[in-house]
Length: 179
Image (tube, rainbow, N blue to C red; front, side, top):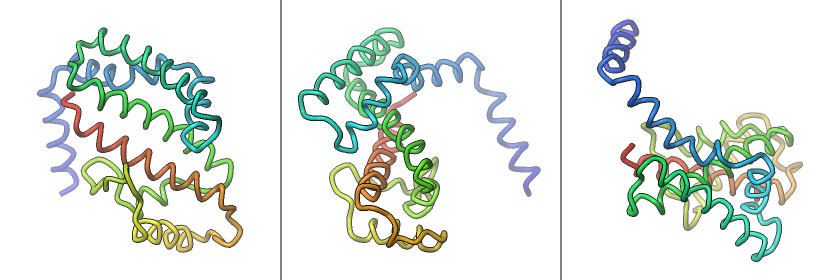
């Protein structure tokens, strides 16, 4: 069975021109590649509440300038520009939060599994609100993975929530983009 799946996947990939795959990756990677480490760290921190509104506006303008360059470079349509910006912001925030939470000994894969984030999974929309059911699923998953939740600071839980929201936006916007 496994050999059949692998062969099917290989056959499917063989029918897609390599340049097409590279172009799709380039579109998704463009903003992330164009943002320097300092901007990424500042955006990640801002998405967890660091800084003030003026600081966040400045960061968003910097990210928008990079996004505009990628939109022009890759002929992304006006209709796709908003979801593309949201995807890029979520990706940068998510990647920063993965590293930040790892430093705090919390694996983000626990959240991904608890909420079914990933290719072909449920990817619930948490862009507006995280329900009590989602929160409890995350907490229970950390308990099940051996984390003593009583020792996790409230500020760290906020980062976990920010990770869940960013990951939700990341997967949903990525799936909405036709490339």
